[in-house]
Amino acid sequence: MTTANPVQVIAVSGGKGGTGKTSISVNLAIALAERGRRVVVLDGDLGLGNIDVSLGLTAGHTLQDVLEGECELRDVLVEGPGGIRIVPAPSGSLRMTRLSAAEYAGLINAFSELGEEIDVLIIDTASGISEAVVSFLRAAQELLLVVCDEPTSITDTYALVKLMNRDYGINRFRVLANQVRNEQEGRQLYGKLIRVTERFLDVALEYVGMVPHDEAFRKAVQRQRAVVEAYPRARASLAIKALAEKVDSWPLPSSPRGHVEFFVERLV
Image 1 (cartoon, rainbow, N blue to C red):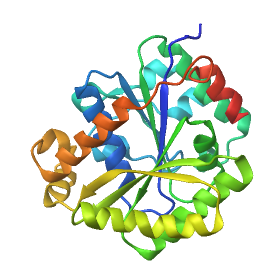
Image 2: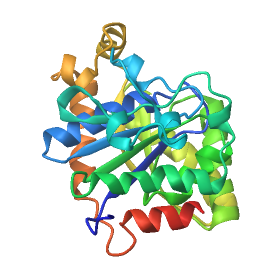
Image 3: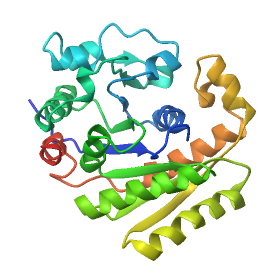
């Protein structure tokens, strides 16, 4: 039975790999949970899933088992830090990188099992512009692009925005500057992206903040912990909590756009 509870679906992407989007996804989820939200994180890198490993968790089942009918979504959920729940993806599965639109829809439809138990679904997409990435971005209500100060990050993010705008009519994106020194550098990075998109595209990019380069992040990764949990007063942790406060104020999708049925409809 599906639910009428509006679920905020946030896809976290960034074009190229190495921008830190997985860390942002996990830490944002924990920060939102601290604010009382019931959060599920979906590892959207369907062929090379690693969120569970990055947090030192052991997954008994993965999304592939759900797709193959071996278990239900509830059996896959792994309890993570701070009360979040994680839907792990398999690692080293070529099969999961070649799903049809109907199979994507089937996976997302499985979330209807969770009933009233979820407020926010965060999808940590894979790098690049594969069919899986595009499918998840099309279906989400909020697109959060994680950008770092590297030329390839800017060009790949621009390519992603261009693709989603040109082929799917999506014209609103939120931008987070990651691994920068300070707020000024974060806004300068956002400015670089804006100058390119304003010249060639008709899209709206909103700057939602920055997460500074912080040694605490590296230490947390080595300990297989989330930085907001391991070092709650670190600069990076405070920045992510500030981001969570903003996300918490984003309008909830209204019926029926926030329902699982609409998410599936956009995937098919």
